Image 1: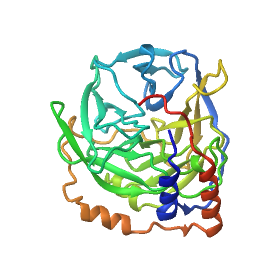
Image 2: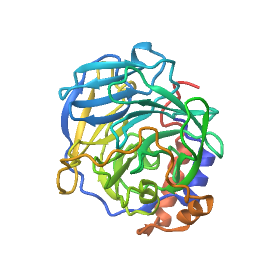
Image 3: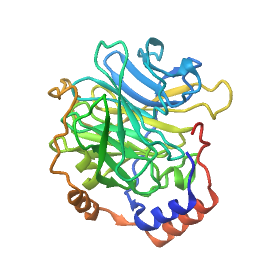
Length: 354
């Protein structure tokens, strides 16, 4: 992803970051290593009762343009191909009804007229594409979550304050569905070590919702931030909620995050394409604060959700933006340090595609 310094500085000055009480950095547990040679740019992951589902964000290698199903030891058990070529698949998630969605939402150069969501129901042989368009111009994005009714939510990868978008009407595979902005979220300022320093703490690279729908998580290259969700309103929780920090220090290039199927821990994986030759991706497990394990699934939502949040208007989104989450505003010293760092950093990682 290219960092545009002018925009980054403006975002940092205008709305970047609240200080957050430092979380306790627990040692990550290694779950398994992924040895398959075509999975070196892993950007999305979801846990299933039988293992994991993952996707790459690269589209140059035909062998990598698949949805990969893994068992508990990270061995590939099944692959699903796309009926047409995806552009930049950056995340995936499982909706409350069990449907798998792949988020074709990456846009490093911010020039895509539409983004895509690929829908794969249980037992289906290939996914169906739904095209969507932003109301305010192209955005790069890497995080996909779901409201309690199954409405997909896209969170942009914007330095500082990220936009939260959802479909403005029912998805239609035969046309393009407009998105609407329903909120904003700003990653708190932390000091967690990561390969990209301060900029790596200010961009959202993945998201997920817990199996019982009571929690949602967003991650950066450095940390995960968990939010409590009430009444299935994930967008509202991200906008208004007070996040809990889960440090994920020094992951090589932390792109994705998901909950375990019992909701008691987070799983992550990094891209390895920029790592030394022969480096294998590792699935890491981070324990969450104690909570009851999820033993049953929530009620199923419609398989092609009509948006149930018509009351979320532009005025409502503005009201969310005006609300200040609990926390301490960033200090002058932290702001100056962030500005100095951003001035010296032009690129987090090279754009791999247009």
